[in-house]
Length: 68
Image (cartoon, rainbow, N blue to C red; front, side, top):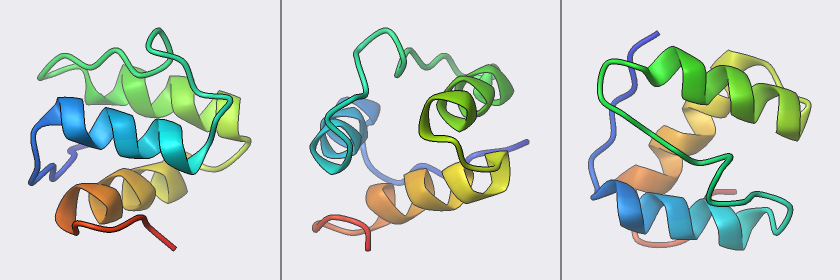
């Protein structure tokens, strides 16, 4: 599954941690080409589908505020 991340990952990671305080740096390890691993990890942690997690990450990376 491909991720469309528009902001630097470091910024996205911090916004995700602000959005959900249970997320850790370990949960948010991201390497290009390994998007599926990230989405799977976050899906389990957040108890959401991979598609919901992808939309959350893309939403946060695409705007300057927090995702709804």
